[in-house]
Image (tube, rainbow, N blue to C red; front, top):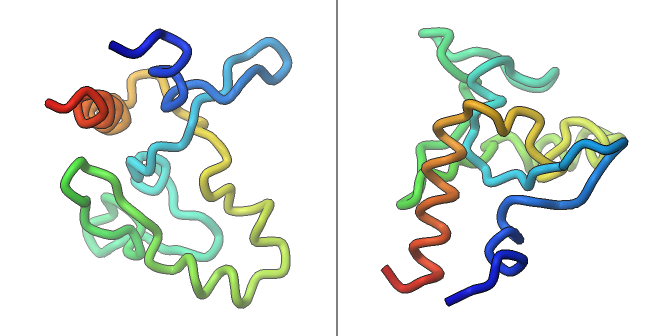
Length: 108
């Protein structure tokens, strides 16, 4: 059994001005709310059109990541790929991935 600190490595990066910073788990939730400046909504306006299909545990990636890295000088600052989750509360997509990651680690 893992202790709480080890299990929280998926969930907690530290504190910023007294507020816990949660890890990005690649749920794609932020890309369903509003595409970044280098993306655009899909035809149904449900997510960025560059957001990938989910993998086996529900994680999604930005299919425009390589283009952004090659063409945007400030790519390390914006968009904040992996910089932490700005919407961890009430984010069911993220919660499901977190459960699956913990299950995978425990051999379930």
